[in-house]
Image 1: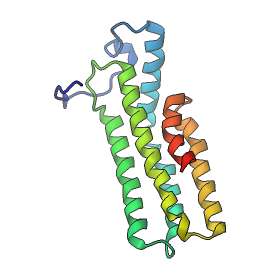
Image 2: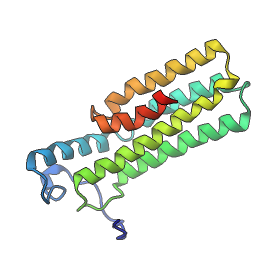
Image 3: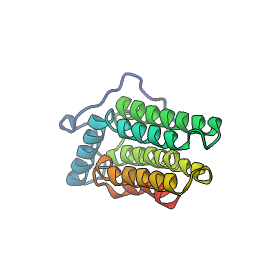
Length: 168
């Protein structure tokens, strides 16, 4: 495990700089990964909006039925996870000489954490009636369907996010 300090002055560099792709990876695979990185970086600020809207909808379903501290804790968890995800993608926590595959694995892990946080809303199920549980399920399925676009069709990232939601 690499424990080198992160350079605070590092910022995103497009694939054309050539710095992000080196090592033994094939040039074409590296180019595809770098394009995925650039797309994720560009769209990082837009991703939390539908998730937060869906979280508000789920909170409105659970409000008055589930314990208020539980609803508030889940809403706070969603906000924190979304903030961490955006800040970490935007600031590119990993150093610039990090291979594209490693960055993508890091973001896949963030997607998994995001999926687990969203899936944690199933803790409201015992407090909801059948109609509310159905609406809750539809919101979760909608988030899962939308995650195809968020993950840009990259299967590991999609499965990392959608898996916990669909299993929950």
